[in-house]
Amino acid sequence: MNIGDKVAGLLGRDENGNEIRFEDFKGKKLVLYFYPKDLTSGCTAEACSLRDNYQELQSRGYEVVGVSVDDAGKHQRFIAKNSLPFHLIADTEKTLVGQFGVWGEKKMYGRTYMGTMRTTFIIGEDGVIERVITPKEVKVKEHARQILGGE
Image (cartoon, rainbow, N blue to C red; front, side):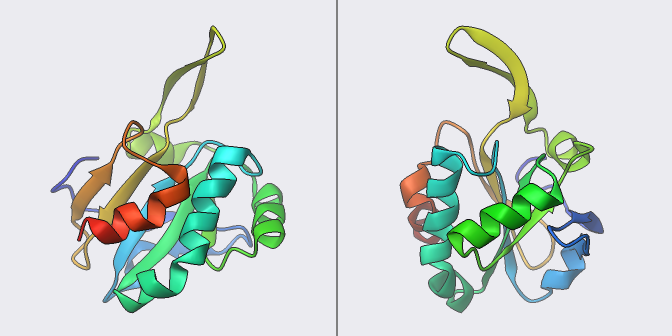
């Protein structure tokens, strides 16, 4: 998915098994952020940046939803441990990461594997992708500022 592409319909199921649909966010911009794994240092820093600035994001018309391929139970533990005020989609079938083009080959410590590339999509009220913050651009500790600063 790229800037100008339209998002609609079912995005996935959250940590409680509830359907999350784009239409649930009518009248708001959606921050749909993809991250590799719950309960890891970088992903926790990113989620906490969004948590700490959540009220400001909401006051500026944004809603936040995180996505990883972790299951609902792990999402529940991640939310509880970090007091996250937003939902996390459990994309265990890798449907959404595939649709958005953020599932791919990664390298760490000389090892090659498949995983989620940390990417954030800012989707307008009309369902059109307005901005993409790519893996090389995401600063996990300052992610909310990146979103708010790019308005």
